[in-house]
Length: 115
Image (cartoon, rainbow, N blue to C red; front, side):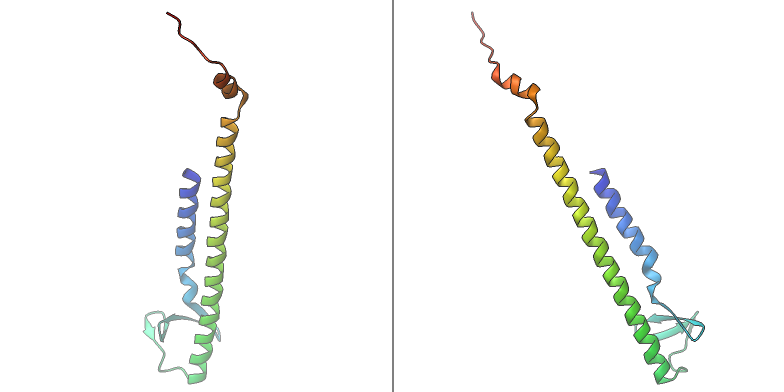
């Protein structure tokens, strides 16, 4: 159970590190897109940008967000596959333990209690 919980923790922590996917560099300036507004630092500069610049920044943001979503989807898929492999390994171990020669001998020997 520990490898699974460790894997889940790693997924969530990696998601937290990539929250900065909203940062867009356009014409040498770093912009942050929050909803429909565009920010530089703590200042909303949406109205001061041209419509073309706003459109390009938002398109770049959407492309970056789509890339992020695809990456997260791949990570979730890999995590499910690893979890499935762990379950299969556990089943194989249990099956091997059930069929081990020591246990077969124990099943074959019958003990009778005579009074």
